[in-house]
Structure formats: C-alpha cells, structure tokens
Image 1 (spheres, one colour):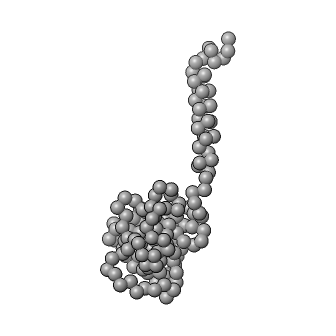
Image 2 (cartoon, rainbow, N blue to C red; image 1 turned 90 degrees about the horizontal axis):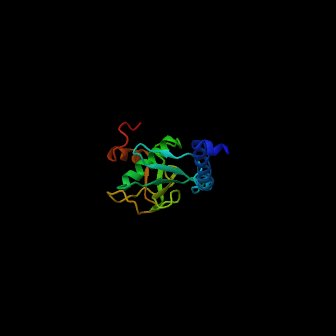
Image 3 (cartoon, rainbow, N blue to C red; image 1 turned 120 degrees about the vertical axis):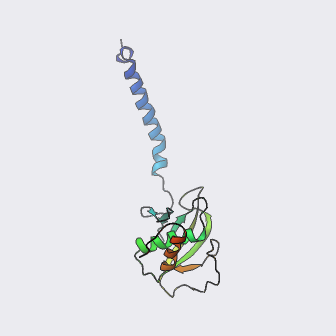
Length: 157
C-alpha cells in the first residue's frame, strides 16, 4: 500500500504543493517582467499619487480617478523636493501630457522633468493648471503649494 493511500491528507498536501509550484512557475516571469523604464523605487507623494522615476531623468506621475492638474503638479513638486533635492526655484515641466501610462499598462499618467530656474519659460498666462499643455511649468515651490488644494501637504517646508 502506498503512503498516500494510507494518508489522504498527505496526498492533498502534495497536490496543493504541486499546484502552488505550477502557479509560481507561470507567474514568475510576469512578476519579474520589466514594468517599463522606471529605475528607482516608486515614490508615494503626499497626495497619494505614485511617482515612477525614469532612466532619462524624467518621472511619471500616475493618475487615480478624479486626478486633476493641481494633483499632478503637487505630486511632481513633492517628488522633486523630497527625492531629487532640487532648489524650490527649479521648474517642474510637463514633458508628456495626461495620457496612457508608460509604467502601468492600462493606467494614465503625466511625464515631468525638473530644470533649473530660468531654463523653462514661466510665462503661464492661464489661471488654470492644465493636464494637456506640454511645456507647462511651475516652480517646485508653487507645485508643492498646490498640495494644500489637493488635500496632501499642510506644512510645505
């Protein structure tokens, strides 16, 4: 008589182990797959938006339902200040407007970069914060000030 015939629980344990091994064998490549060109750990901004640093120095802020222009700039300014340690006069610039995410398939996001003060035009002639104007930019300080509007930061500096 086989060992498993005497102990059905042992047979179930082996079957469960084999099933788990099969699932892991199938899922492992997906878990190890490159999630895009992000290079550092994901940053969680004060307004709970995720920021993915990219290899070329840009970074993507991922949207959630209801994300607005000020929300994007809040997260971008928070990331620039906290992780890049840039001066508050540096400019946060939209590189790619709101659209399909490059780091989260099926998601939405905006791509930003940070440039030194004076390197980007600051002639914003609008009273709104656009999610569609490539080149739109605000100082890191202004971007972070938008966090109070979006419910994130309360003490800015």
